[in-house]
Amino acid sequence: MAHARADHPDEACGIIAGPADSGVPTRHVPMVNAERSTTFYRFDPTEQLRLWRQMDDQDEVPTIIYHSHTATEAYPSRTDVSFAGEPDAHYVLISTQDPQVADVRAFRIVDSQVTEEAIEAYGEVPDRKNGGDPYACQSYKFGHSPDVVLYDC
Image 1 (cartoon, rainbow, N blue to C red):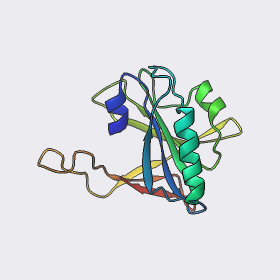
Image 2 (tube, helix red, strand yellow; image 1 turned 120 degrees about the vertical axis):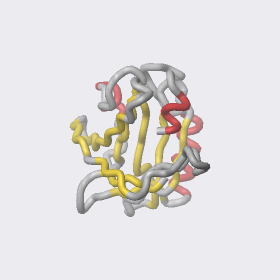
Image 3 (spheres, one colour; image 1 turned 90 degrees about the vertical axis):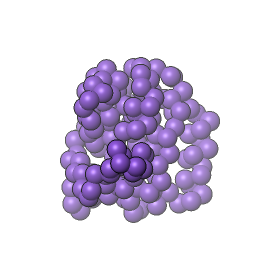
Image 4 (cartoon, one colour; image 1 turned 90 degrees about the horizontal axis):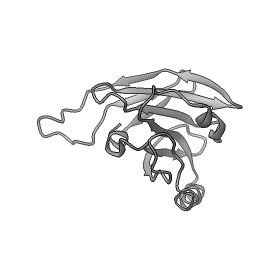
């Protein structure tokens, strides 16, 4: 959410990588939106190639692929669906159209079929106002058993 808010009014994008075959996201990698657009995102090709090679070398996969929508709800556009190339990834969309509302939704996108997943926040909410880590966030669960992904950021 912080990355999406920081890049607003442009769409933000990135991944959260995790060990292959684990379904566990462990490493957040904010990426550059090569389009620098308020309505479209595209990973910088050089950065993406370098990251995908690094993930291969470390036996990781993109567990979560995320981006923001700056003027619409957090739901995949036709373009998002057409570019979704990681069938095992959770696609997380963050809408930054209202600065007072945290609109975050998760989806699976396989063969152009969009299926929304539940997101459940758990644990304590970080106390940013009283000297807490300004980048800390709650922990989240994506999806349903048996394929539940936990992420603590």
